[in-house]
Image (cartoon, rainbow, N blue to C red; front, side):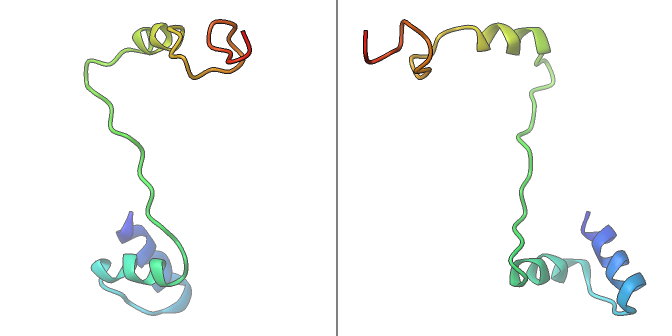
Length: 69
C-alpha cells in the first residue's frame, strides 16, 4: 500500500519519498492507518451467522436483555 502511495505522490508531484516515510507524512496530514481484523483460516460464514444469533445480553431491543422487563 505505501508503495502505491509513494508512486502516486511521485506521479502527481514529481517528488520521491522513501516508503518508510509515507506513514509519517500521512500522520502529519491527519490520516491514520486502519487495518481490518485478521480471519482464522478455518472460520466459516455459517459459524459466524450462528454465533450472531446467540443472545449476548447486550442487545437492548431483545426482550430477554431489556433492563425494563
